Length: 206
Image (tube, rainbow, N blue to C red; front, top):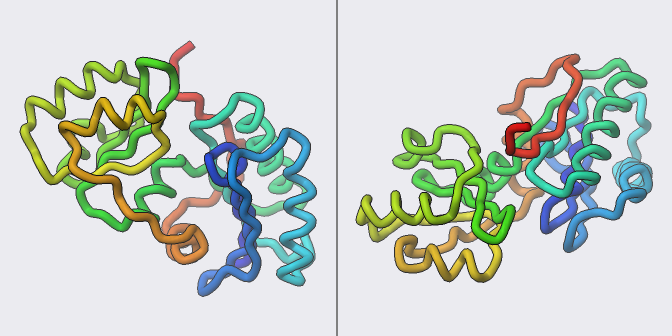
């Protein structure tokens, strides 16, 4: 496997060249990527890894959630590379990246989207409640957490400070995260690559 991975819409931009055993090169930046930076990142990370584009066997990219334009660029970039190089592509949800980085069995992934709204997904004991990433009013999430009366719940994700304060009485701790580089080879090995056309994940109907 020689896979190009990128996440350009999260709180941390990551672009990496990865085999099934190691990360050959990685570029990280605090904050989401600018609209015109993806191709520069790809050029630079391939150069660091000493790979040619023709040597890539797959492209994986985070498809959401994130900024509208950033996600469109991510999808377009992955699709264009897949088509031009005749290689398989994979669209990954941000919650999967956080699940792997937290390495917790029972975990809530939360992502602020509006002042009173979040995306949420549950893993482990929370999987039945929120088996897929969904859009919720923060108040409805707090009602569930309060009714469960669980004191050792761990969360991860990207929350506004006011949302962190709102969940604090019901969620005991924020998960410690390992680096993206440390989990990428195993995480990419779990993914399904295909010739599909990737679509951004915005998380709302309509």
